[in-house]
Length: 420
Image (cartoon, rainbow, N blue to C red):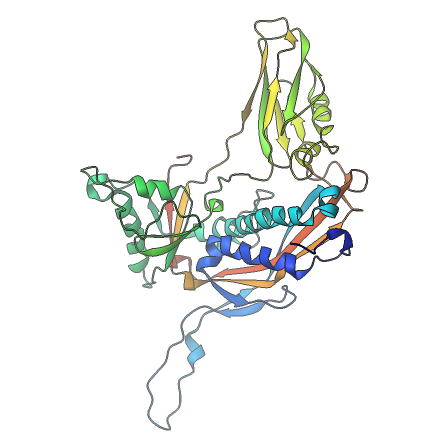
């Protein structure tokens, strides 16, 4: 990124040489976008457009006879662009003096964030940011297909995971409409499950060289079908936005203090019997520029705390949390311990089916706006933080996507026991 310096960029849109590759990488990272077909979306991304979904029927005619109308049997779905947005606070020093470093961070994180958000909405109809319903509706959520197959339902003696995958394919092929199966969108944890599956004699089932469980990309094959992986399919994500931790004060201390560290930065001493508001203030004090500008200080500045020991701490960005209770006194061997809240796993492991029955549209390439004057709410709307006062630059990333599914019967969902 030599020659690009954000200090010389107007606070509007970043140049295409920055945003273009990020958007391209987002589409390559998404499992759904690798499988579904892309259709043009209106330039302003908000105009509803008809999308032909079925294959037209051709007919034989005599010379000079009336020709059949090819569009008469073509199903049509209406697609409307929905805005996907993300506000990213970064250190002003990084934004103005190390544009190459900032670009590297954006090019790594933004495609992952966009791909996760799109796949979660298209498959589970979930908005990852709020946890609520996604923008495309229940009828366009692939996980709502009536066809289902449990991974692990078939014994090893009868084919195990290999047979389970084929049973799902069979369900689609034997439906009222004999759809083709063209690929799988899968959770990464299906890789080791397939690789470790064995027959009744303990011999590996997936020995085909085309199945590469260690592939450096998110692409592979399963039972001969192209397969793309994304953790948003199950909902159990690494480096998920925000994280929740529980700090427990053990041993019933009667005095002394403890400290909490967020991403390696430690609070001042906190009284053994402090209330949630006091702990929250101590953690938020770390968000005044002591961190990296992209992680620890941002996570701390938007922290919310509830409870009175145990304390439930929710950060606005992923960062590790530690506690030190060595200065607690009284009671019985007092200490402070930390545990991270386990993420929810939907149990969904893959979606297979006829991806010609699903289409996505892109209204425009990703746009990134820059401001060092605006304010934002890192905790979701109760506390405003001034970018100017805290020496931050805010990057607003926006993109428009559309998504439609013609027939949920063209797909099958593969599930597993939640958490396994």
